[in-house]
Length: 173
View 1: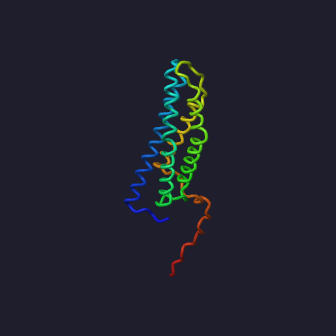
View 2 (view 1 turned 30 degrees about the vertical axis):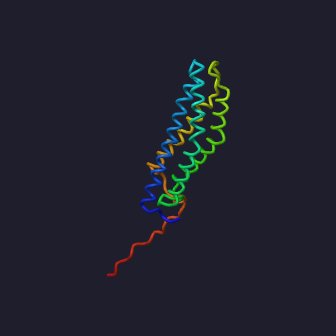
View 3 (view 1 turned 135 degrees about the horizontal axis):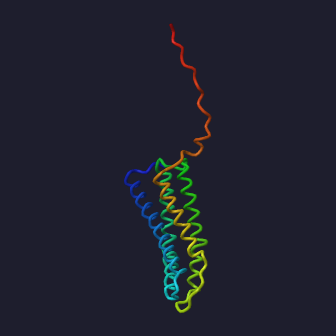
């Protein structure tokens, strides 16, 4: 893929940062609502928090995740920070894994939780309601740190044979 021109680069960076920040914000919101749902003594509050978690996640998690991953892949191949950089690959793998966990575990779990909640009767909720947002928030925060710090080098950079040492040239006298 060719390198992105400045207007396209800016547009993709803005979309990537906005979707990534939104994804982290969603995850932190789910964490706050999950803690509220698990710790409250009021059935109506638990019902409201649990159904809000389901509504938020089911409405925006997948679109936000797809935009974050899609723009990240475009930036990976359209900039100098390509797949040869370890931090880029780690960030991509972690993000795709978090997206898969969202689709296959978090969304069905929140839907099932919302289905059992009753505004008139308090339920004992599974720790998954809090655990999933904690893990996802950690992954998204870690991805943000990787984007800023850009640690490590290129893939395979540490495995090269050292350059041969040349003897100093003799001066002719």
